[in-house]
Image 1: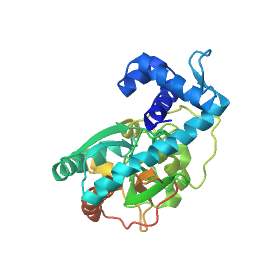
Image 2: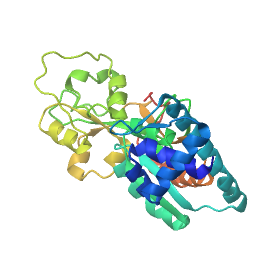
Image 3: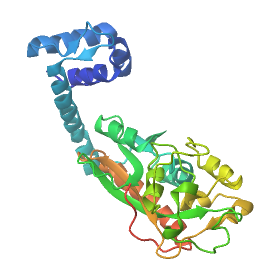
Amino acid sequence: MTITQLHYVLAIAEHKNFTKAAEKCFVTQPTLSTQIQKLEEELDVLIFDRSKKPIELTEVGRKIVHQARNIVNESDRIQDIVDQQKGFIGGEFRLGIIPTVMPTLLPMFLKAFIKKYPKVKLKIEELTTEDIIQRINDGHLDAGIAATPLENEHIKERPLYYEPFVGYIPKEHRLGQKPKIDVDDLDIDDMLLLEDGHCFRDGVINLCKAFKKQTDEKFQLESGSIETLIKLSDEGLGMTLLPYLHTLDLNEKLQSSLHYFNEPSPAREVSLIFHKSELKMQIVEALHNVISGIIRGAIAFSNVKIISPISK
């Protein structure tokens, strides 16, 4: 049994296809098939049910894949230990960022990070929290940036910043003339929300004191775009809440519709998350230091007092 064979097993389990797995591993399909067959003969079990389309894991195969992932992760730690000992901060680093953070945070830190750590090759994807957790657990991401706490036993969290919520309320709205708002003012019945799957939506719902499922809705919004929420709000269809960093790029006209909360302001915790195996921690630390430093300066200019964040 070799580490290479285990890499092949994980690739097939992911792609459910020998040809695609071979391409991912940069080997020919016959080479990969031969190595899998040798491993199955050595273990005297079938790892994959080749009669199914797509290929499926056998019952024992699922257990083998779980253990193979642990072994491969631990083998990666050897090089990781050497890199940390040498003080080397470089190599590929795969990072997932949730949609309500990506457009505002990435432009703030990316250039500074690349300049400071030119040997790190960042591969960044915009993903939901659920997808980030799954890919970290599967070994397809090194880390993610998401709203926390997650309460996942396999994931560790390093808070980056606490981001205030800001009301976007047109002047014609019932709260439009209030200089500042309170959490008790919020009503889910006139709140425009992001579609299901966005943790920011869940946070807003948690803030609203009287959430109930409507049966006579005039419309149902299914949007993943904060910009869409702002436009609908301007059309008189309700109010919405925005993450503070998103408000920094609004033009002067839109800024006039922003309403801050009375202190203490509700906020969300945004963290760098990674697997409990703590691989590539030198890059995780580098990212944490760069991002938290930049954000600390931006948040310092807000007109709100940060309190403990709401749950995801």
